[in-house]
Length: 230
Picture 1 (tube, one colour):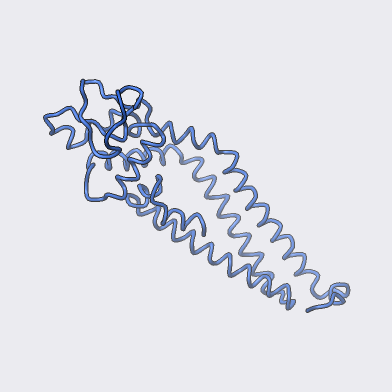
Picture 2 (cartoon, one colour):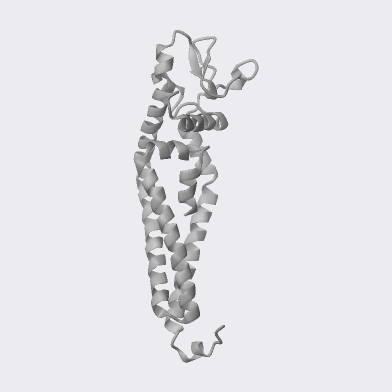
């Protein structure tokens, strides 16, 4: 649920670009929120089943956790084996954004400016991605995106961190690195945290499954019925 809400509400990362450009991601985020809400409901029913010794609720809780775990593993495997397709789709989305910049979708463009500025990158594959922009192509001036400006190549700071700036030569004073490689570097740097969170969630789900099936089996045994209930 938290990840789905993050996708819908985050306004300062790749998420705002993806949610404005990809209908599939919006649908996926709503599905995640729905699954998260269902998990909370199943957790509540599992607690009721344990307190009031209702085997049906415990069995339902176990089944729900099992289906969620299988779905998570399947999604992870699908993302891993389809990463090239995802990269291509992301490239198409960014290319469309850069071609129409600046357009009517200010939130998407502000997010992309923020990404280029903070990650110190330009375009998706490189700064050449910006050469298809309609404003740059049709302008009589030598323009480049201000958020791409490499401050180490110019004297003084840029007066703007969005929109277009005028270049003093044919060589743009921008970052040579594309945001594709910057995102990959960020993912590799944080892969331990990402895997840790995923494994932690999986372990909690497995423990919940083990405990629920154990309680379900023990509910009508003599030893369990002697345990005082409150």
